[in-house]
Image 1 (cartoon, protein in one colour):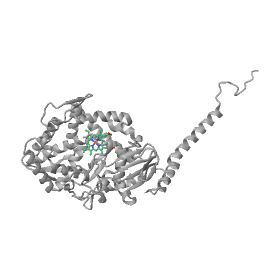
Image 2 (cartoon, protein in one colour; image 1 turned 60 degrees about the horizontal axis):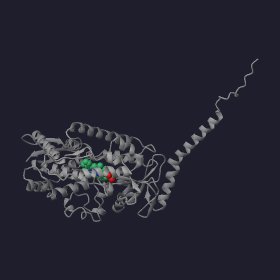
Image 3 (cartoon, protein in one colour; image 1 turned 30 degrees about the horizontal axis):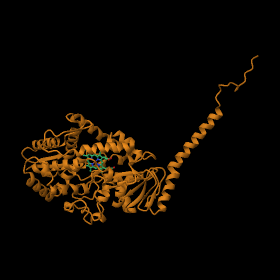
Image 4 (cartoon, helix red, strand yellow; image 1 turned 90 degrees about the horizontal axis):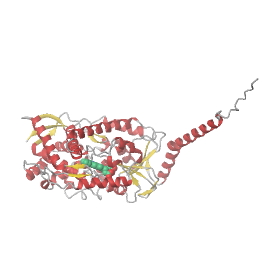
Length: 473
Ligand code: HEM
């Protein structure tokens, strides 16, 4: 009779050992999760409050996300009165309300991550100058940067330095004549042919508008998609040369991705996957379209400035195509663009993260704290700009940017420090040429169907479009 001894086989799994390892792993994972969403936020919150910082207390598990979404939805449900430029409560309702309640530096919670909102221009410059390398781009949002194929902005450290140098170089080589048909430079296969392209496309826009206006007034043109297509074409031509239709398709796809990402971010407030993603959508594509759109909207609201800008353009260029020499003499147009950039900054906020223990304004921050720098709130701060802060007064820039605000420079539409916008000169040039050509050919005013509703969709966009009535000059 055969005797079978159970458990004596050398191949039998040591179940109790496996169970023990599994239980330990589960315990470790649970401890890590608890540490991340409960213990760490409470510890960080206590440490920051002990140093005198105001702000919200951490609420498990989503922090301030519910309030953030609630305020955003409430703000979007109502339009603003026409000619009102106090856009901060509508564009960034949560940040605006936190700063009002808690002062210039306030702690909030994106899920379980601490997010410090900061609106003191001096501290902002300190962060963006990043002298000791302790404040970097947010690491946790790199996946969205990759998704949006954002190039330079997604890079860090040495890789960023190399890419930045190449692109800076490319932008600086652009010292060519507006009228030159052969202006081209190639740097590592990146061909730049700005001026002829600008001239060519602005002309296309003007010609098309001319045709649609016909003999009399056009009821309305939604200039927002018009400018998106135009600036997409311009940059596509610059980057892709003749295959601009392919470039345009890429820009359209990027735009759709940005909108989907914002929707997704609004839907989720799970700890770990948080709204910081929204700030990563600070992509440059389309920012010049934003600037041109708000400039036409604001000049429609202030016809006296539209007239002044047009007088200047006609004095400098008459009805001929703008050239680089004349562009440098557009003083009123420049003041108008700066004031629009102040009141309607296309990029509403930028963010940084502490990479190491850092001291700022007498407070010590641990690594991993996000700073949100709401450009739009600083641009609308009466302590910095005076009681007329929400009025459209281009003359405040009459003596340049540094004299426009009470304090030292508090004008950040293009950022500041080493990561300042690489395309700012290009964007301003494009906007000046575009605006000059429009002023040369058309009078414009708001259509009765226009609803004033600036809102944040990665950039500052008109929620219901920007319908404008045009009249040929
Ligand atoms: C009115 C138009 C524009 C505005 C308001 C604007 C604004 C900004 C801001 C605020 C930043 C800094 C982001 C940060 O510090 O995190 C930035 C960065 C950047 N911008 Fe612009 N931008 C504009 C147009 C453009 C254009 C036309 C281009 C390129 C053709 C461009 C390319 C870039 C790039 C590559 C960066 C990243 C720089 C780096 O990380 O070193 N921008 N922009």
